[in-house]
Image (cartoon, rainbow, N blue to C red; front, side, top):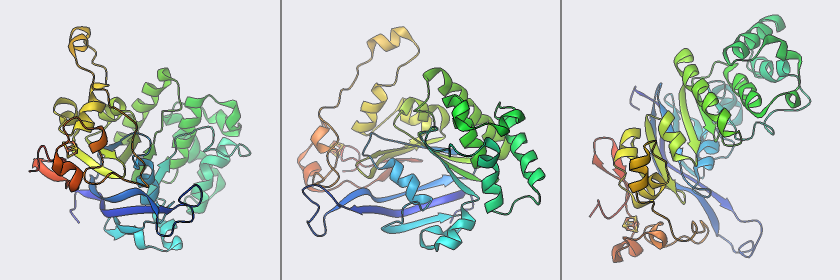
Length: 328
Ligand code: SF4
């Protein structure tokens, strides 16, 4: 493992058995939510993971943190393969590896006060000696997040969506993590609040030297916050590149289509731009297209695209793409 990397994912697969619908009784038929992906995350950086619903991006986050057990592959966190740890061993790692969920309404226990929500993980991980010390730590973090220590005695329903997401963030930060997986952390919030929360994420990264895996369907958001962007489609990585290159020079036809939907803040340029509309919906990851998974929606499809799956190969420093237009 490279010293620069805090996380390395090698050949990760997560398949789910089908328990309902027409394939339910068909032995061996699986949903291939994540199908053999590899990537690294450097310490102190933000990697964005982007794709449509059904791309597998959320499953990647949940499998890394072991809410799901991987079907195959390695997840190396700070030199340890956490994919093979027991639940007890994994609990020790979870202090350093936290996850923030999409829905700030559902992710906080409505029966607990903010103090209980934020201090509970400290108790679980035996951090700080007394209740008073844990309370002071909770108040300190809330203050950093623009909330008041008086909020400690209140319940989640007394807060707005943006405030609840800050409380979720405070809970994650309470145990001094090094790596936070953020799963669509602002998509349930008003647009006016989203930018504030994203700025908070950026400020906290500097304050606590955090590393983020930032999962979102919104390429504009991901590009803004990320050093590097991974584009997923039907359980596979289509492209990995530094954020600026994804914006200036996207290579994969799928990334180009996502990119064309990102508004440019210059009305003259924006007016001249061609918007690429993808035909059809994302295919089923039960019955995957043969060859390139994107071929039913790609306007450049060649014969080989329907026969053989393209490999993710480096085409320039730090820029990888899985497409026969570049990998002949
Ligand atoms: Fe399109 Fe072929 Fe590239 Fe797939 S491999 S994105 S079908 S050109």
